[in-house]
Length: 72
Image (cartoon, rainbow, N blue to C red):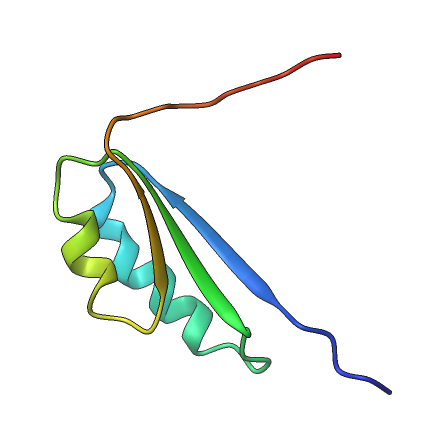
């Protein structure tokens, strides 16, 4: 059976105090993800500094965009 790739996306806005625990939870899973993405939505706390301590890719917005919904 061919192994599937797994990506974990963690959206974050000013939740740096929870981010380390969330990333560590992903890292201890039996099936390791191929990538972990942290989406920093313009945080003004230590979100980027916490994420930088882990093997993750961080995508940062300069300002908070919030939830964007599009209906068709």
